[in-house]
Image (cartoon, rainbow, N blue to C red; front, side, top):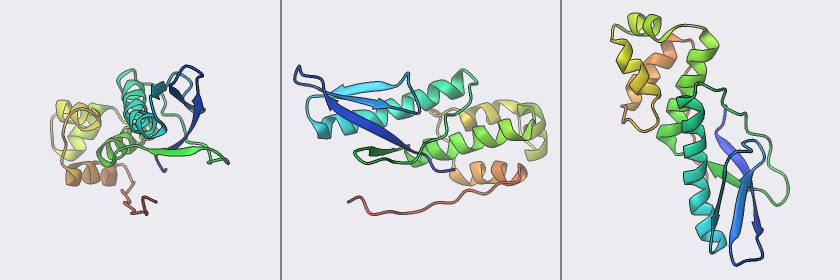
Length: 143
């Protein structure tokens, strides 16, 4: 799963640019310029996904980009943690059972999926592996 969500930016007629996500209807933000709106959009997306994790909700699947959309990517750390959260849900395992399989405490599993808690990437990769997944990283041109 890729964690790039399409966003639309519209002039609100009052000097701001409104950003919305069709896949995440409760996420919206704005900026004084398009560049500021895009910067705010990434923070808004990260907060919306973190909210889904915190509330134990499903993570919306990003739809394909359409003409005029802006691709907004989750930061890499948040994407890795979100992938782990999704894998745990798909597996049907409890955090306690995953912790047992990793030889750790259940609190560590909760921290591993907490978007605001720093977790070392190899630990996330290990947990994904136990769940039958692997993490893939790619690099794309920013232009």
